[in-house]
Amino acid sequence: MHTDQIRLLLDLAQTHSFNQTAERHYTTQQSISYSIKQLEKELQVKIFNRSNSGVSFTPAGERVLQCALQMHESYQHLLNDLHKTSEQPEPLAKIRLYVSSVLLEADLPEIIKQFNKIYPTTSLIIKEVSHDAILPSLADDSCDMAAWFINMSYLEREGAAYNKYNFSYEAFAEEPSIAVVPIDSPMAQKNILTIEDLGTHSRSMFGLLPIDHYGKDVNHVVLYENNNPDIHRQLMLEHNTICFTSEKIYQKYFAEDGFVMLPVDYPVLPNYHLFLHKKDKTHPAYRVLADIISKKYRKQN
Image 1 (cartoon, rainbow, N blue to C red):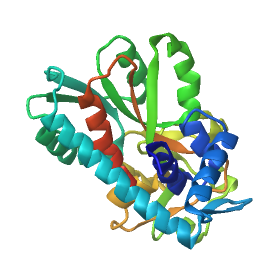
Image 2: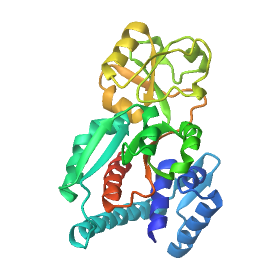
Image 3: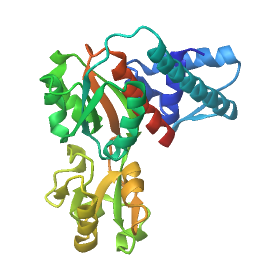
Image 4: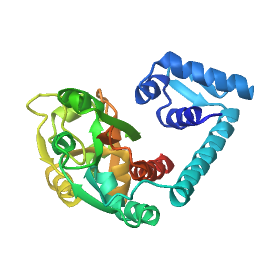
């Protein structure tokens, strides 16, 4: 099992989809399927069950996945040790990281601590910015790296104008949008929110963009769009709004406060936590920072 196959297994454990995994690796579904078949042939076991609803790990595949996780962690430890002991390029004085992710913002102190253990002389300069500030800031070199919670359709649409800047990005977590309502709301008794529910209630957006697939009907009003959980709570309790966010954000900010989350019967595209940087940012410190964050969120999935 080589490193590319390990990354494929870890991504397939998140997406349960050959097609979505192929998009992450900028290749075709057929290429992903061929690589997995080669691994199954090498190990002489069936790793995945395939169905119309996606792919799932077989019992043998679960053992292979656990081995892949251990190998990935061992490889990262090796890289970190080599960074400490081998000949390194001149340490970076600073890395300017722009963040537009509510989830990541809450975990920054721990991430900074881990990074400083490896690069104690490199300053992390972190700035929280709006969604629409990420690409312009990378383009004009205001920042070196960015962490973004974004819908891929938005990135494709807005990123087209920035192709000339030779950006690179990778996903370190994926989540669909979910709805949050107070536990004593009539909506909380539903198993799923329908398009009719969405058409009769105002909504707030916590950590998500109000992108086109939510509809343009006059009833689809974004009453509030910000990253302050207290205001979202107040709007839900006092104005009967529906708060759109992600499951991880719900678990961190709302799960123990008298709210429930509900799936939405509406075309909802996946949202991705992404790293972005220009391809000329090749210092090992950038990779170490990306791996620290990736490892954290892979464990949460």
